[in-house]
Length: 57
Image (cartoon, rainbow, N blue to C red; front, top):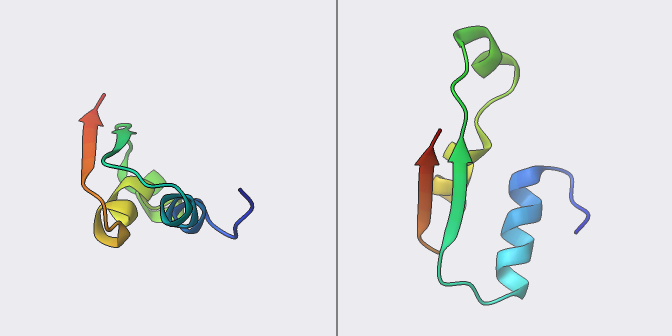
């Protein structure tokens, strides 16, 4: 899929393909890394219409 952002691409994919559950993983990052590159997992938890299972690494 082509999209401007990762979360937009995932949302478009979920709209086109019936899905029961979205599974995502998280990585431990520092404060500066979170400022520069916000968490895609947090965005998907808020935006997704399907349940999201988050696996913490």
